Amino acid sequence: MLVEFGLVASISVMATYFITLVLVPVVLVMLPTPKAKHTKHQDGKIINKALDMVDHLVQKRRMAIYITTTVITGICFWGMSFIDMNGYVVDDLPKKDPIYTDLHFFEKNFNGVLPFEISIDTKKENGLFENNAKALYKIKAMQRMLEEYPIFSKPLSIVEAIKFSYQAYNEGNPKFYKLPGVSDLKTLSEYSGSLKGQNNKLAKFIDSTKQTTRVSYQVADIGSKK
Image (cartoon, rainbow, N blue to C red; front, side, top):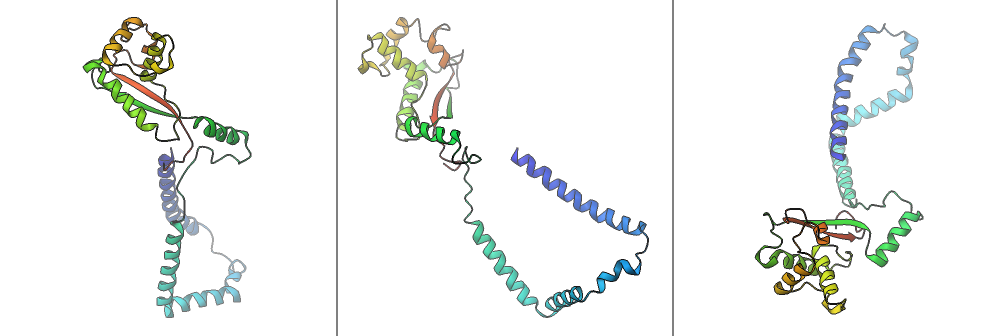
């Protein structure tokens, strides 16, 4: 939307400039010749002195104008380097707004509330469970890597769902909250009504072809750069 706004604005400005070049001379030609009282202000002492000064600078002080313009332009570019091109979701909210306060509360206690979705495509049907469910173990490794970043919440994914099912299969023992080995994974699939089944709860985390899945996080409002 910002790019579209920039394009429309730039085209409109150029169109206005072109219309002005064409329209103003036409209007001036059609208007009657101004009377003396309408042009009397052009003979004012202040205006004439200002024009004479500009003419003198242009004719006699060209190098000074070039140097001054170059210095001012350099200062402007130097000042632009201090602009922080970083955006936050709550930039438009005052610091005392309840939403601002609530967002920082959740960031402090739950690592944020902003959605961060990772879509994983195995490029082939039933790819999540082929090759002894190799894709699942890669997803597990990715989640372990992201645990090193404190801005992420706990993930919600097919791997976490399998961990929960494996723990339930072992009578809720917390030490079994993990991704089981290949052999246990096959046993678990029989216990849960087949991991590949359409009516299984785990199917909510994957598509109907078992090709793609999604890992969902919540993330802190760390700014557009990060």
